[in-house]
Image (cartoon, rainbow, N blue to C red; front, side, top):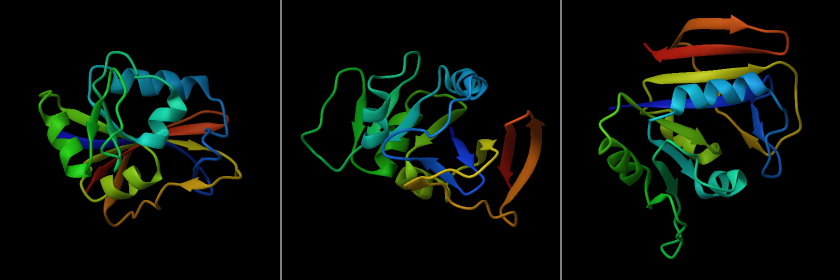
Length: 156
């Protein structure tokens, strides 16, 4: 199993603001669902709580340092390595890191692929996605729309 990242990010690297995504793009949500359905997803506790419930059709793995944290319908991991180990039990091609900022920062060193929605424009935010280093990542696909583009990167 390989690790992939899926993220929507503005031109100024914003991914969130006060626990919310600062834009609404229905095509991005459809793409997210299509790519992640049936695959394990790894997220931080704050991301899980902002979603509000486990995402159906996927093993939801939530990273938290709180050893007492528990919620129905999810698996808990206390380290990124543990989350990947749990995900690998599913025997899928990819596990997807779906946020937030700290999960993305940690996943960048291990991921083989990034599925990115580039949201055109700048937004106010308090959560950010790391810059994509083109010496490490090769953009292999881009589909442009009016307000966003879907981009796929693979590790060189």
